[in-house]
Length: 302
Image (tube, rainbow, N blue to C red; front, side, top):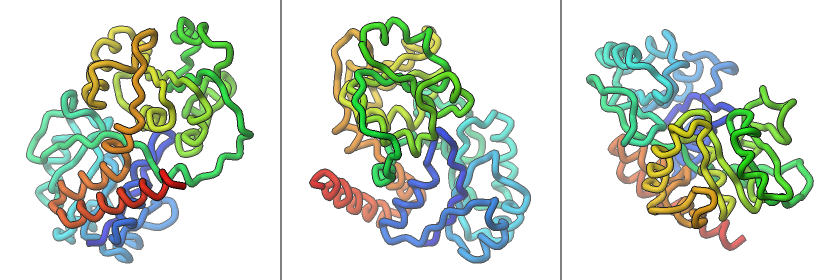
């Protein structure tokens, strides 16, 4: 099997990068395609993929044209952020393009999109284990609290950070550079998270982002606080269910470390293995799991 993965990475997600690296680690021929560096036809004609993975908002007429002329190539699309009207467009596309399924990064219990002809699966974000190899240019430090948010959370989190002598406000949003202590893409920010004894993750929507799994993998004491209180009572039980616990993530309540759970169930290898299963590539899924065990054992001993 040969895979071509569109590089739809953002400040908040390295999903296409880690899926590509996981597939390569398992011996698959996989290429990460940056549309700004090569055209659709150059990329597709060079790789001749058996499967293409892309994002709905970056799917264009040239991709459609190539795939409609190569029906043997499976097309899998990340539909996170799509509206219901996009499902109708997807159903029309499926008449000419081989789309076995699509996925969203939302939990299966709260998928917003109603399925049409094409099955919509849930594939949550994950801890990107490959980010650990990226060296940090920041000097070493240790801070009591890191507040990691997708918005300016200083007023929302005040009741928490007032309990700590030292704290930093962190974000992946570049628009907050002048307001907060540290802003960087999650690719660079992840390596800093182990320098905080406690981390509060806060989002302005009930969505679950990669930042949460990066924090849980790096810190024993992680709390989750939604920007809006109306979201809090819905998101916390959902996260606890995903993490296999009836407690944790709430400030001023029992602190629970989810490090081992994340490393066992929520790394990029887990997601790549799930994706392979959905593609009915059972042997590839097993290979990814075997590589994951070796990779994680090697890194835990280093």
